Image 1 (cartoon, rainbow, N blue to C red):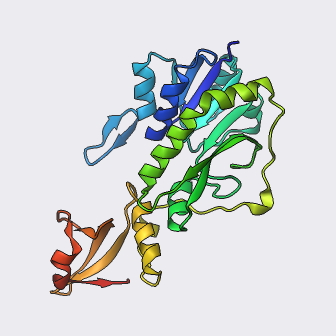
Image 2: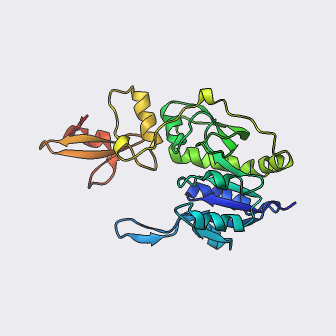
Image 3: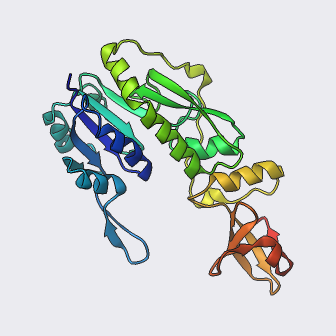
Amino acid sequence: MKINTVFFGASPYSTIVLKKLATLTDFPIVSVVSKTDKAVGRHLSVLANPVSLLAQKLKLPLLKTDQFDQNFIKKFKDLKPDLALVVAYGPPFFTPDMLDIPRFKIINIHPSPLPRYRGATPGPWQIINGETDSAVSFFQLDPLPDHGPLLAQIPLSISATDTADTFYQKAFHLATDNLEKTLLNYIKNPQKLIPQNHSQKTYFPKFTKLNAQINWTWPKPKIERFVRALLPWPVAWTYVQNQSGLKLKMKMFPDNIVQIEDKTKTSWPEIEKYYTIIDK
């Protein structure tokens, strides 16, 4: 059995699954699809994303795109895929006519117990909300975001020290451990799917630097979770005022580590007598 597979991914976490998929002889990769190279950083250096770099290292066919236009859709169809696997790809979203191109459809791996925590940032929000039980969901894409029926859902615990990064690392390694078994079970019986209970859906917005500001009216445990949840990006922050009355931004990290703009990281107890936290 050879199930020709197209892999879509654009995040460092995508590479965790891609490495495993590349070893599965039943699922030969006919192409990896990732985003076009972007200029990043202060010097606007053009860098390939981690998925593109790994595909090149593994000598896998590679397509780069930022839109699913008719030109790309034709390339996708010409690959004659049996299956597509999506891991942390993000927009653009798959068009309805793309969903039926692979005979076994398009499968997404989502690090939450769907239908709960749909959306682009399920990891941080589960931590912020104090969840301790999560899951990795394998589901079949349909025209609505994170809406399609489930292939499998593997339980995952969230620890009291998890950051977004450690949570995603655990989630996608768990997905990798269960990848071959889940895909093989699905290929053997592609109709054996579990509809999501849409009445239980929850959705939380994507984080930006703006909404990473700490709300000091929250209880202390929620603030601590918020700080952990926003690592490695966008990092929780607040305003402080120095003894001269100058208002500055201060990033906050676990264990009372802080970084005032244009300064190095330090411990808050070492500097708190020189600064006052302000809400606005």
